[in-house]
Amino acid sequence: MKKILVIGWLLVLLSMVAVIFWQQEWKYSLPTPVPTGYRAIHPGEQVLLAGRIKAEAGKPLFIHFFNPDCPCSRFNAPHFNSLVRKYGDKMTFAVVLINTTRVHDPAEVRRKYNFEVPVLTDASIAEACGVYSTPQAALLDADGRLYYRGNYNRTRYCTDTRSDYARMAIDSMMLHVSQPTFNQFALTAYGCQLPYCTR
Image 1: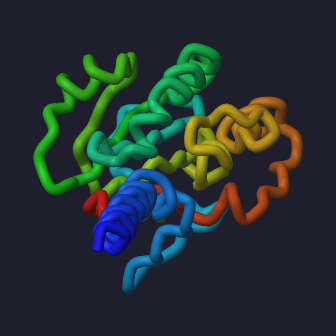
Image 2: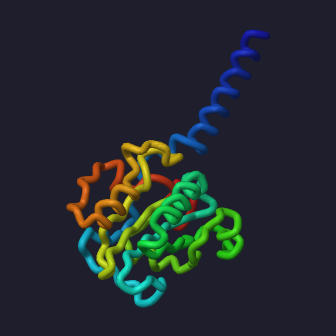
């Protein structure tokens, strides 16, 4: 009887560990399901923002799609801030909060994550850029055409310099060289599905 109880407890503990691992890690390493009716925006396409983001004339625009309820977004915030510090004088940056299960105050999000750029709450910007998960980056050239839309990095913590996709896109656009050929890990959405941080 004692053996059965011990085995039962071990199975319960292993099940709990498996559930926690799924909730905190594994589900975010799978591609985000493409929503029904999704319309992709392709590189070179004009992105119509109709003044929803104030970009400096003649400068590219980098949009960071962020969800405070998404663990991937929270881990990504320091990397995004490092891009702003490095390229902030060469392009306009903005953070777009996506509608989530609760309302977030842009000023509070800006303070909490040390964002030094405007934080907006217009979720229609995500649709205009073809974004359906967080965190995602959209880079528009000075004419408002999509140059890159995708992931920041292959790793959740943005630590792999070989797959620093967002920075690679910025560098190639700034140097006016041909756009890098990005693989599926750059262009397939991973992270939290919009509008909720669920699967």
